[in-house]
Image 1 (tube, rainbow, N blue to C red):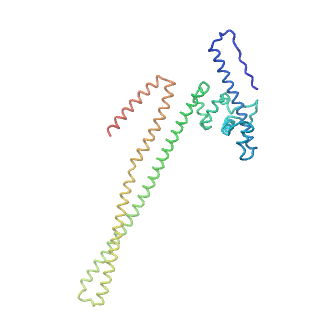
Image 2 (image 1 turned 120 degrees about the horizontal axis):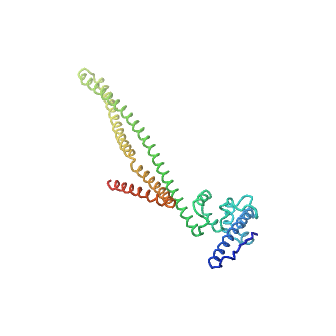
Image 3 (image 1 turned 30 degrees about the vertical axis):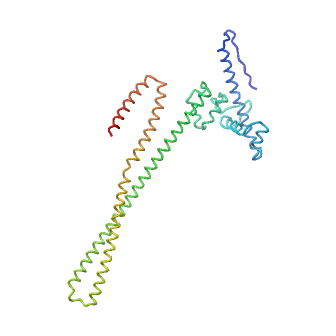
Length: 313
């Protein structure tokens, strides 16, 4: 068992403040010791869970060690997140010195963060001087920032995907318009050729009215009607193609107007950059208050200028 020794300086007057400091010190040491043993218990619970029959885990916890499943999971998670693989009762107790010095309650609070984010969070705050309540508040604030970053990233990716889809649609629309125009040109050429043939045939018919036999007139009329029918069919196809081309032209013009999507993209990026700027300014305000005042003044002037520009729209 861990021994706790407190040296009392008899030259110091025993006041309530001195006694309170000693009590808080003992509380901290007790909490750190509790974390060591909690990690040990978590390790053994992991082992026990592998040995207990399926479906009997809850009953085993209640009967053998008087733990709820939620409490057991908390202890096992403490071991998985903070304990060493070769953890022994008097050996290593945590994966890093930072975590090794943590009180139990703070270690539990840190479980609310993913492991990859926890390391960055611990580096960014004074975790030793923060109270458990302050630590939990900081964690919630940090989680909210992470969520906001993820939301912003997802929004940016969505806008980028929209832009990519629009680019593909534009390319497809242009290709389709080119195809329609080509078909239309071919139809117009065929139509003109057929119209010339029909006109030529009509002139021939008119000039041969007096010399043609009834059988020849019948054949000539059948040929003329056939050409006329083909001409009407081509005219109908030509009209349909023209309508399709016009509809596609309108669609292409609408697709090419990407101003709204671009506005959303740039506004989203502006919001993201502004949040990053305020974060950096907060650090600058702490590290160099005088310089931060000058920087903020310059930024405010630029923001006022931008506001004036926007009011002019």
